[in-house]
Image 1 (spheres, rainbow, N blue to C red):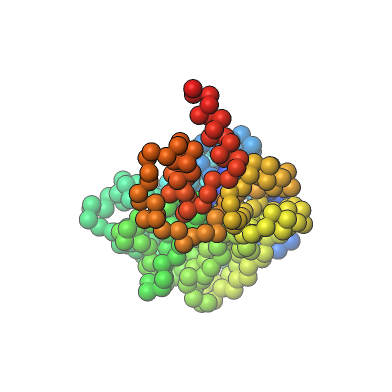
Image 2: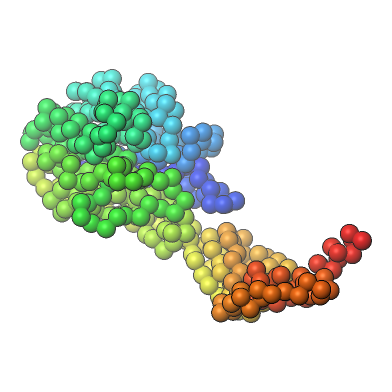
Length: 403
C-alpha cells in the first residue's frame, strides 16, 4: 500500500502584507499531481489545514477542492485532522458531505468517526481516536490512530486526566490501549497526530518563527518513545521542516509545510512523504521535493547599487533585506529600493558604527540651541550616529510650524 503524508498547509496565510494564496493554489495542484503519479492508496494530512480559526472564502474553497481531487471523487480515502491553527468544530462541520467523497475530517481528540462504505473502501471499525479502513483492492486493512491537536485544557476535557498529570502520560496510555485492542500484525498500523513531539534525549526542536507555539514548559513535551510498538509509521504535523525523529525501522516524520512561511524557513526545501507499507514489515518512505512557491531570502548589503542589482536579478522572491550603511537611508533611497522589487517584506536599516558608548553623551548641555540638542539626543538613541541633513531639515520644519 502506498500512502502520501503532508501537513501544515496553512491555507490563507499571509507573510506580512503579502498573500500566499496564488502560491498555495500552485503547490496544492502539485501535491495532487504527485498523489496521482505515485498512484497512492491513502492520503494523510496532519493538521494546520488553515492558518486561522476563520479562514477566508478563497482558502476554504481551495481546501475542499484540493481534498476532493486528492480523493479522486471517493476512490481514495483522505484523512485530515485539525492542528493548533484550526477550529476543531469548523473541521468537523462538513463531515457528512465530505464522506461522500471519501474525505474523513477529524477535528477533536478522541473523535469517533461514524462508519461508512463507498465503492472502493469502507470504515470497517471505529473507536475513539481510531479507524480501520478496508480496501476492495487490498487483502489487508489499514489501522489509523488519530490525534488532532489538543491543548492541555482540551485534553483534560476529553481524557479526564488529573491536573498534575502530564500530556505525555495521557497520550501514552490512550495510544497503547487502542493499539493493543486493534493493531495486530495482519494490517498496516499508522498514527497521525498534530503535536510538538521530540526524541527523548535529543536537542529541543525549534518551532517555526511566527508559528503559534504549542510547547510551553516541560509539561507539554511529547516524546516519540511513547508511540506504541505496533505503529509502523507516524505522520506528524506542526514543525515546518522535513525530519524523521524516529528510526529507519519506525519512522516518526514531520513531512514539512508545502511552502516557506517565515524567514526562519528561508532556503528550506519542502516535501511530501511517500510511504510503502505492508503488514508486519518495515515500511520504506521517500521524500519528494515540492517545486512551487517563491523563495524566501534573507540578504544583507552595504551598498545601494549592489542591492538594486541583486533585486533586479531575483524578481521571484520574498525578501527580508538588511542594508548596512554609514548613515540612515534617505527617503529617495528607500523609494528606489522598493521600486526595484515588489517582494520586499522587510527593509531593515543597520548602522555600521556599533562601538558607540552612550556614556559619551551622559552629560548634555541643556543650554545649547534646540537643533544641537536634537542632534545630541538623536546620537544618544542611535549608537552615536549623526542625524543626516534630511532629518535635520524635517526637524526644523516641525519646530517652525509650532511657532
